[in-house]
Length: 122
Length: 159
Image (cartoon, rainbow over all chains, first blue to last red; front, side, top):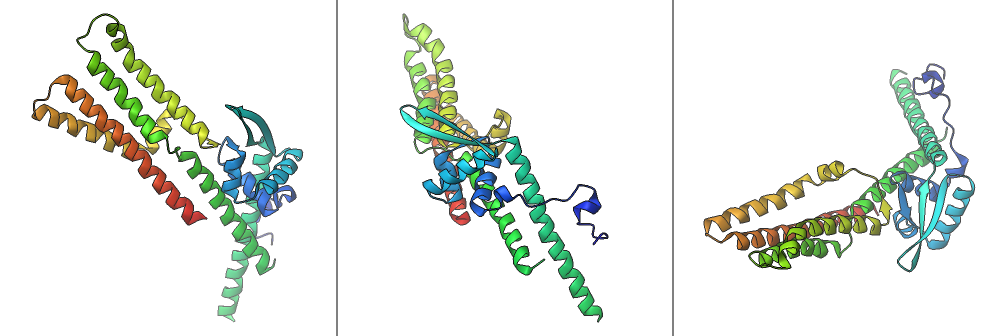
C-alpha cells in the first residue's frame, strides 16, 4: 500500500477522509451547488438539487448548525426570500470530501488494473 | 474496498459535477422579461434622440442626457436580471463579455451591416441611427432567447 502513488499519505498531502457531515447525497448536492456560486436563493437551490422545500429546509438547518453554510433572510420587494451561501469551512469540507471520493475511485481503479495484470501474467 | 464503495464514490463525484453545472447554468440564465426589456432600453433612447434632434428648449438637455440614462438603465436591468436568477456568481464585466463574445459579435455585426445598408440606400443620419438601434435591440432579445433555450436544453439533459 505504501508504494501506491495514489495514496495521499505517499504524496504527502495527508489522508483525505470522507466528511460525515456532507456524506448524505442531499447534503452533498446542496454543498456542491453552493460551491459553484457566491450565494443562491432557496428556490434555486431546491430546483438545482431536485429536492422538496421541507427536505432542503432541514438540510440547510443541519448544515448551518455544522457551520457549513450561512442562511440570510431578506426581502425582494414585499416577498420574503432566503439566501444560502457556503462558508469557508463548508468549502474546505467539500474539497476534502471530493479528494476522498477521488481517492476511493482511483485506488479501486488501480487495484482493478493490478488484478487484471496479475490475471494476464498467471 | 468493495465494488459498491467504488461505484458509490464514482456516482457521488458525477452528481457533484452535475449539480455544479446546474448552478453554473442557472446563474447564466436570464429572466423571460429581460430580452424585451433590454431591447426596449436600447431602442427607446435612440428613438428619443432622433425625435429630439433639431428641437430646441427642453429637448436640448434631455437629448444630451438620454444616452447616459439608457446606459444606466441597461446596467440596472442587467443587475436586476442577475439577482432574479436566484444564483449569484461574482464575475467581472470582462469575464461576462468573454463568455458572450460570439453573441456580442453577431449583434454588433448585424448592427454594422444595417448601418452599411442604410448608408447604401441613402437614409438620413437620424433614420439610420434608429434603424441600427432597433436591429441591435432585437439582436439582444434574440441572443437572450437563444442562450436561454440552450441553457434549458442543457438543464433537461442534466436532469
